[in-house]
Amino acid sequence: MAPPSNLPSARAVAEKCFDKYRLEVDPCCDIGLRNNLEALAEHFAATNTLQSVFIDYLVPWDSFVRPPNIGHAAIADFLITRAAAGGISSNYDILIERRAWDYGAVFRGALDGDEATVDAVRRSPLLKFHGCAHRDPASTVWAPSQLKDPVISARIERSKMWMSANMRQKDLLVVGFWSDWEYLNAVIGSALVDVQPLSVTLVDLSPTGFLEEKAPQLWQLAHAENVDFEHIRESGADVLDQLRRAFSTNYLRQVLASGKDVFEASTGVQCEPGWLEVHDFDSETLYGLRRDAEGVPAGQPATRIRPGNVEALGSFHLLLRKAGATQLPDGYYLNGRRIRVINGAEAVLDSLKSKFIEPPSVVASDMVVAVGAIDLGLPSNLVRGGRTNDLVRPAAAGDWFDVSGARAELNI
Image 1 (cartoon, rainbow, N blue to C red):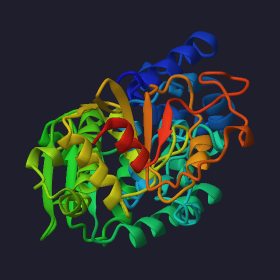
Image 2: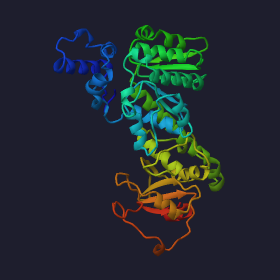
Image 3: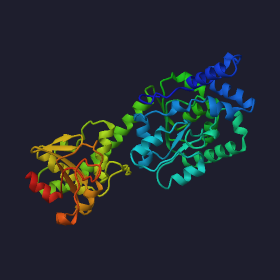
Image 4: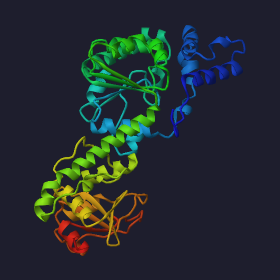
């Protein structure tokens, strides 16, 4: 619900549905249903019009089509990199999926445990046990009576089996609320009864006593023996963003630290502690630096939970810092040049350059140093050149160098 998403609450959805129905169809509809989405949905289920009237006509699906916020971005990042073992959502919207697509990932929300198992081959799954506005909205769950439907009940049972098998002895982070749906709290509670979590961290602005009353089964799970419980009364989006920034900062520190021994051995200079620190950038800037550390251009997602084979990359970063380079959101500034440092991973420099033809919105550096890349020195007439920011025949921005070429160019 945090901006810029500003998704409606369950109460707001109920009011919109009720007001439209009372105005256009039944002026005598019980006013007591206006603030209770579950009861309102049951009203239509009882008359066998839950799908034809409520889901297809009254539900304001366009209210769920909004820009993703920093919380959605964090969840997408954690699932793509497997920093989280999995995600479970009771939301119909596709804002997590949309943010993953923006990053260039092939991503879908799983509708049951079987789909979650399939998705786990590529990345950590997002299980939407409540249904999805994008995939089969007619089967979204709104009322307890729907649990008797053979298709929906079978889907939920498969989801419960997946939760029981894949969430055992994990650290659980519950973001935003225990579900506003009482019967779904019971479903989740029964699925998690034997998972024996190591810890439960609940992020919710509501008072502790209210949450205990709202979901007694989940509360009992969170307070079982040997379970560490913490209630954080802050915005879920803000907490997720803080967690993501910590994850990215830790990743980049590992890159720098990996190059320390190589740097000291090659220069004979002891690495200063300040050279191993990462600037306090925002999440998207840190994400861009992680992409560069993986050798991934904009338009493709970062996929690594921790860096690998980055000793040379870390060493070159330290070399720039020793020379007095100023850290920028897209790299460094030194000797009048804006320098971007990417992981070449033993690629051919010209091939890597063609991979990094990025959107004009990406900040262009004067120099791009591909650490680990091999410069074969191909004659320019063998590779048809493009033009920077040209939509017809684009080219990678900046002058590209391998490490030796960059050291000569910068005199470091």
